[in-house]
Image (cartoon, rainbow, N blue to C red; front, side, top):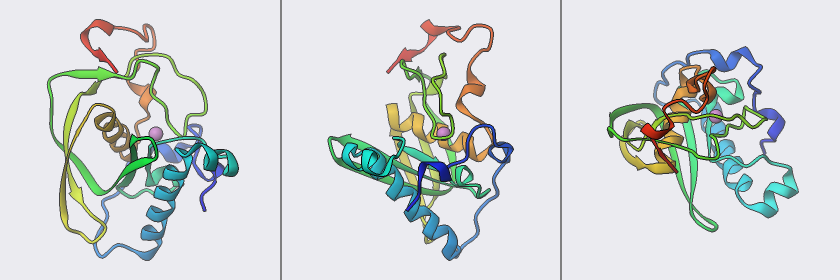
Length: 182
Ligand code: CO
């Protein structure tokens, strides 16, 4: 089982690496990592388990956050209390986006960033993501709102980008009115 301390902190330069494409068939080690990531994300969003195992809540994780520079990500999206949609995408790519942009009003969060960061991170309100499942079958996902933000956030990780890189340093709330708060 993954523990919060297994997740790399923002101070680690490894998080700044650009991850490499995955080839199929996938290695057993990576498949195991994926199961652990999904387990962590799910448990972390169930209050009793998060408390029991001391997990920081999160809905997404990229392999690089465990120190693995490979292009895969997992998202566990709570669609209603205790009901989760799980996404595992290998070599994900954003193939189309909305014009409209949104931001998380309370500020975006990240399992690798253990502090509150103020400011606006503009994200597309809707994205279409293409990639592969763990068997190498092509998949396509249409995501909107919170889920769309999660995909953009996790794909950024694969390119060595952290969410606060998008925040204007001098004016964290710059152009606030151009985007819709969620
Ligand atoms: Co993150």
